[in-house]
Length: 113
Length: 115
Image 1: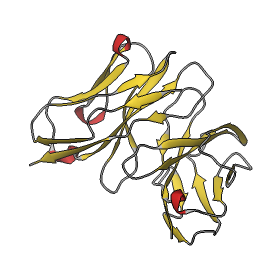
Image 2: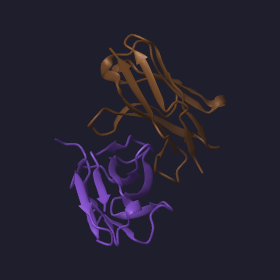
Image 3: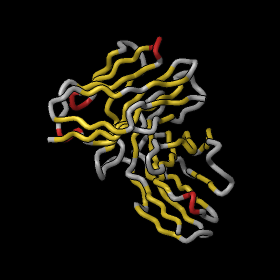
Image 4: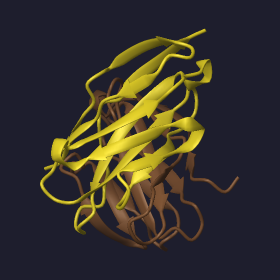
């Protein structure tokens, strides 16, 4: 399968714990995006990388959230000191350079107890 | 800031009925427009997109959408729906003039097709 992959697919954690999600984009896609989707809502943009550079961050990305893409390939999204309000589906997407289509992965569903 | 409004949150149709899902966006500059679909248990997939040129765009599975710039609209249509079209449909917009690269999505329309 050559699509966007995300790991894990599901994560259950207790409030206050740290969690980390991984996204592997389509190979040779230099742009990578993170979104969050809660029930009954469309995906909301969190942050965007072009290669290893983080070029854009939404105001939704609080200080407890950090994203990296160290070698311009896979990316990680870490949430520190999780809160119940962080429960959501976290989506990753990638696109080729230029104004291109974003291809989405299956998402990581986070449940914070 | 950009925003997208999808007027119908839930739509129920019978097979072979015609479909039109409304999408309006708010943004002053030039835009790229998208419709994504999420089938039950699957991830978001692109149905169709508009970047420039002919405002009537055709996508997969018989879907089409028309960009009407004066109305800030990008409505999705299909002349005859099938049971397999049951899914969540999302309209999205992105500035095409550089700068912000993230997509702004609407809240989605849950479409149920009854056999």
